[in-house]
Length: 509
Image 1 (cartoon, rainbow, N blue to C red):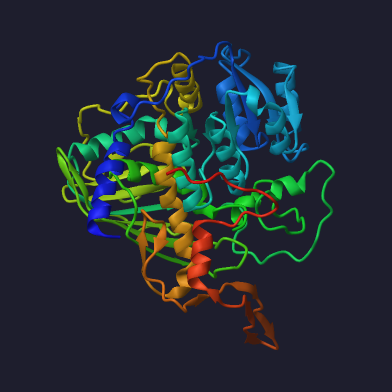
Image 2: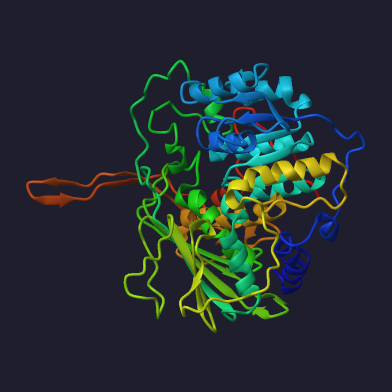
């Protein structure tokens, strides 16, 4: 990417994104108020309610243990697995007797999307983009679980669709609404640790199976599971119970591994506090790279260019290193013996020229290695209830828009920030899958392409690890996919080819 184009992006994009938590919409571009302001309860659709989606719909619904908010109403819920979601669907049917139940979001959208005000998406990663894009294109407010999308292009698409629609959005990285992320930003922006040129981040995940060969056994599809709807835009494959529920995140076609699961919680304060935009270099390494399944452990290094200085601290080039699968970064000098870097599933270490800052997963319990407790000015907007108010803050934003407020305040993880941030997460996945090129990848973020992959370079992945021992002697018999053109493979990792009739809306200008 040329220096001028990168500078233009940073000034126009990154600085504005970093200010979202402090500034209302009229500072960054006013959203268009609807001419006919809706009245009454906010009519909601829930897609994917049997897993994490259950927590999200509960958060917008329940005011207390036995009391529900009077400003929302679910008119439809969908889950591909009626057995997995049975208890949730029955519970919400009691709360909202007129609510309709579906096992395919397309049918629910066809019947109810026009009547709805907003959509909550808690499905597997690979269907986030299509479900949210269709809702945004219809002008609906959207809450989407993390990761926002599986790929870079899909994140860019949702960012632009949300901006065009002028609706309230929120990604489900609830730590972004918490005090820890706010403190991390305020300390860094106040110059408390000096200039940051290195960040090490990690998680103890995955805790689900990864590094597996594609199963050959075909299981009978349960009568309560709409397997075709689960597959959605992904390539067709026979059903096996190892894919669903929950284990979907360990398979390339459906998920993003530990990166997508936990980096959205752990790297968000890094992205936000350091005003990051597009990386310029990416590199990945992992345990054996399988064709279908995410690796058991991986390390990703992303390099970001210098950004515009803040009033109290410069923003020089910074290298962010991510590790998972139990690989914990080396301890920073001065950290007390016995101090565990892992807080609630991982953490991030900011190396500054004046001090070192450590923050846990979800932005929890930030502290300086020196032991000093900064008294920085509070410049971030505080969300009532902290992380617990993350979903209801989205409802608050919807209500402000419905009331016609031109200066409505964006949520803590509005898609204008969550989209560019999720590109960071998706880039880590791409770097890992292209590690066989044995090179540092140069990234043109503005145009979503790598600039230095050789024209005839190829990559492959392992299908089977046929290691065995015969009469005490080891036998190595690994089977690999046929080599494929690396440029073409990279392009599909960035912008997936949807199948089975699914089509994304066009990318707005």
